[in-house]
Image (cartoon, rainbow, N blue to C red; front, side):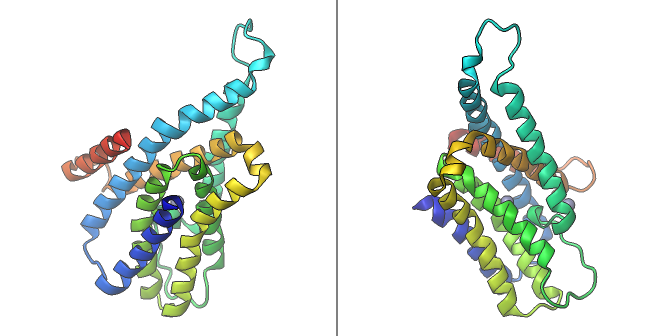
Length: 240
Ligand SMILES: [Zn+2]
Ligand SMILES: [Zn+2]
């Protein structure tokens, strides 16, 4: 049950924080972003990546082991990871980087930013899929979406959107990750191609988490607080 609740509640709490506390401390948000990016990247590398390779290598194992080089899942899975990276880059053309907490103020928004909404939802839905096999990833996604929810809610409210559409919009976003987890447990198609879908998500997580880490700092100036936040993210992911 926690796998559904954590990613959902983290966004709701983020909305609440944005609406009630109206956080102005950009510095603490940046540290939270740096931590969440490092935590997510470490979870991906430590937990998700080895499994994706192992699952596909076993699946391609019948090709014979006397081959000089690996022809089986190893190559294929790498292509799926790269496809995930490219897919996330394409999503960000439409979302303008909302998934990593990057928002642009182009004056006032009239009506719903539908393209942003749809690409953000696709992103969150896909992220939910490997959670069915990796309950610990629910925490990574929850922590990743928490600062994003704060930043996006504050951005929409400040850009003149009414509170009710913002709440509906953000709640739908909150529901996408648990929905992805639910779908991947229910649909046999997802179950059948699970290692490849996971590989795509690994690519998405690679791109998103490294972008979060990159954008959480000013240029490339040395920043001890940022470095410590990243270190904490890595250590926590290791012990999870
Ligand atoms: Zn960005
Ligand atoms: Zn996400």
